[in-house]
Length: 420
Image 1 (cartoon, rainbow, N blue to C red):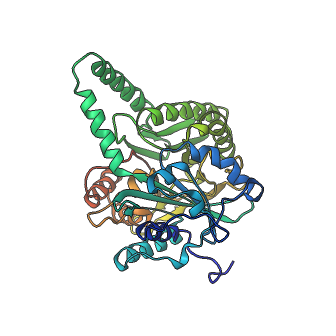
Image 2 (image 1 turned 135 degrees about the vertical axis):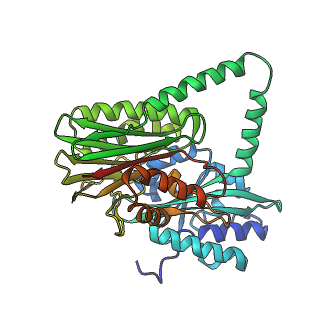
Image 3 (image 1 turned 60 degrees about the vertical axis):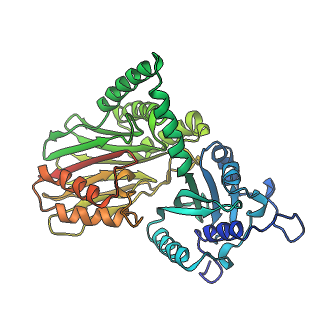
């Protein structure tokens, strides 16, 4: 469809905020949009709805023309708007004030460029309050090829309140907090044991980093040689944080090791993990992104496959990093999330450095509320590629920390490889 007929997939923010700020009453009538009935909903959306309803975040799904197809009950509770007030709305004609509109335009451009974005907003509510939310946008493809957009809103004020209650509970005298702390300590040791480890293998040197945002987290990784044939590198990210995400990450890690031990092609590894999440985990509201690389023993060729994950990078000192994008979407949402041509093939040269990482590195904000995103990481990789290999990892992390306004709120994982 042409740009003239399609509106931005992020223009729903302006629509919702405008209607809330105007305190427009809801009156059901012929002119009021009705919810999509099941017969009108695409099959992929009907499959996703039960999962989206289990999430603790507000969720909106829009088609590639910006028409809103779905909102979940959490979004209704957050905004105090009925979904029938929003479904099928064309949000293009509604606006915020000039200051907020400028931020929305920047947010829209970022989403159009990277197909994913994240930014903090103050969303007006009907009672006059302003909700502090973090908005995440992911643009994906339907099985038929057309794009759709999934937007999640995390109510950060409630998150801070909950974290405060947990801290207060842990300070309560008694045995249970001590037992919980001991369990978390043990869990952290187990999680660290599953983190990817540095390695020297043939022509390849591997450096790694892992740091959960809490005691334990949802990132996991693999650095695993297969005899003298090839080296498997993998890094994954389970949605959410804390104990639940860590348990799921451990389960997926175990299945990943099984598949790699059976010499499964990378596309089959992604397909198996997608089925595992859908059948056993997806109903709990968790999703997984993943990036995997397989480098042959000569260090001269590499396979890469990603699923909804930030692009991998290949860089030579003094050159612009090349991006290897994910061809598949997030695992656990759709049965056919893994693209038939999920695997990319590329040659390698001596001096090449390869970076896999999670969005705990890209999704950090500076003091102005701007996100680092992939472009920022790409710049840091270019700057540090001229450093000795043993210093490059810390050089990247130092630059990310200097950019970030405060400590990281997400798990951070990184795998860095040099071809000699």
